[in-house]
Amino acid sequence: MRTDPAGVWAEYQKGVSYNESLGLYEQVRVNERFYIGRQWEGLYAPDLDKPVINVLKRVVSYFISMIVADDVSASFAPFEPDKQSEHACRVLSHETARIIEQTGLKDLSRDVIRNSAVDGDGCLYFYYDPQSALVCAEVIDNTEVHFGMPGVQSVQKQPYVIVAARKHVDSVRREAEENGFDGGDILPDGVREGDQPDDDMVTVLVKLWKDGGTVRAVRTTASGMVRGEWDTGYSRYPLAWMPWDKVRHSFHGQAALTAVIPNQIAINQLFAMGIRSVKMNAFPKILYDKSRIARWSNRVGEAIGVVGSPSEQVLAQSVRGGDMSAQVVQLIELLTQRTLEFMGASDASLGNVRPDNTSAIIATQKASAMPLELQRMEFYRFTEDCVRIMTDMMAVHYGVRPASAGDGKTEMFDFGILRSANLSARVDVGSAAYYSELMQIETLDNLFQKGIITDAVTYLEGIPDQYVRGKSRILEKLRERQAALQDPAGQ
Image (cartoon, rainbow, N blue to C red; front, side, top):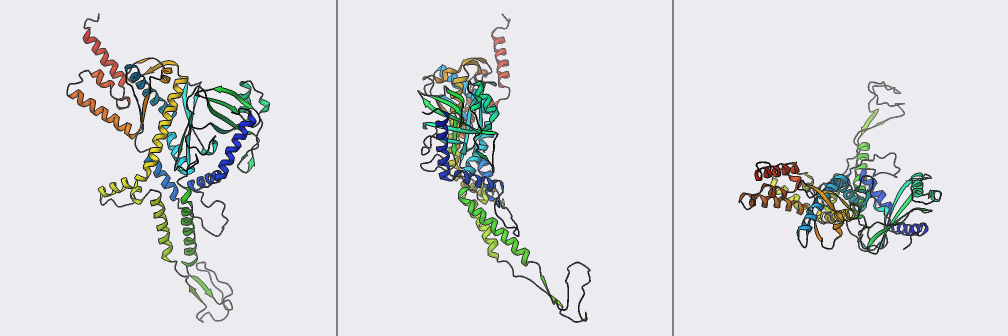
């Protein structure tokens, strides 16, 4: 496993060459331009209007809203339940919910889905911030990640992963000096940013690989070391990956936009030529006799000088161009409709129908959303990977610290137990976990109403935290009341 700057840079260049063989960089640039509406860029046609009928952006917005429509939740349950493992799972659920809230994971997930649909892949990179003592996450582009075996789609099966980032050379030099390396070895690598090479920036590479059951890492540039090899202690790569449509023998997925960009171009071209035709032919043109009228003007009220008697007729006449064929408008509508349908966003799903039969519309919307189920399941798998990475990082960095199991009490908890072989927990992610929480509440209600559960504290402890605001304060008051009833004299 190469850890020297030259070796890591060579492996990075190998990943860049693979991406270039796929045409990834150019395809991502094209897809991004079409998504944000810059769909005529690079075309020289000064006499042609350039309308943009952005069908693609509306469809991607629909995809994002449909995939994250349900409240995504994660729950933990031990395979071999006992008192210790069940308590650890409750603590883990509570801490995971806290990290999801603090990192803004739900907002980041929308960006990941957007990148997956537009660029082909969405990626979330996790790291531990020692200053805030929190697990953090950031969205990175699919062009910045390079797998050791690009034909294998699983992140955790890779021999190594390289994550690239562009940073200012001065900050990288300071980091290298803090880690005991010569900052003078860090030189700008001349990688172009746009049209010109940027002399103030350098590409920093983080190489991750597994050795002895843990993930090791090194941080380098093309010319020098930034941080030497260290053992992260993680058992999983801190990287969650979500392709939109999987491609055989490649870890890069196929974007939702790539196949339909020609449709978008055709729609824009037909609109542009239709506008041109209307502007050229809709208004009458004047034909006049130049031998009798020296100059013609269309200004209102302006006199026109003629040669000869003004009473002579047929000095000029108007000519109207031919009408544009109705097939142009029909073709535009057909192209738009078929593009939406084959992308999985019909008029019913987008709400472009008259609400005459509400039940039929709802049924049609549910049926049209079925093609997105594969992407929704992939998103749940991606979220489960995120949760397992968080658990892995908590086990390494949290140590013994105050934690809560969601019952209102805070106690010292050893997060190292999460690595215990006895704690083999199941992680349920998605709307199914959300509905299971609602079912749990309904079951508790039935048990309480039938008198099987008579203790209010036991009842309230079983309800998930997010459904009762101020749950810890309510539990504290209930325990105080129970203590007072058991010892009325206060002894």
